[in-house]
Length: 140
Image 1 (cartoon, rainbow, N blue to C red):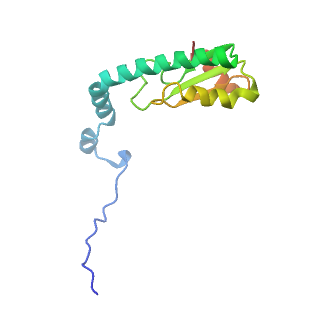
Image 2 (cartoon, rainbow, N blue to C red):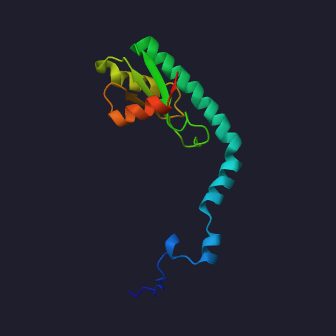
Image 3 (spheres, one colour):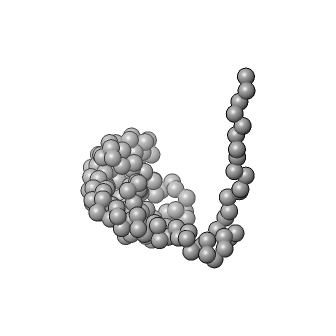
């Protein structure tokens, strides 16, 4: 049995640092990202509104059913301009009984199945993360 000869392209890919100025002008990742975001702006705005509504519902559930004293929205949904079509919802809570934390996390996942909702316990997370959430997050 004979196999056809394969021809291979042995040219290695280049990094951005190895491109000439002319080649670099053709490669504009930020420009491509901006164009893609502009095209998806309406979809992103709609998804962002839906995500915010889901975050509010999740915060209400955490407070009413699981005794959360405070719920803070953080991450891309809390920052203007960084939410994408693939963003999740990041919530931090204080006051949930540690024995009920995983049940609370599972319950908020079902608020809107179109989003992954991550929950952080402010009383047990890393201090640097807690500081960042308290500084930049939005209370719900």
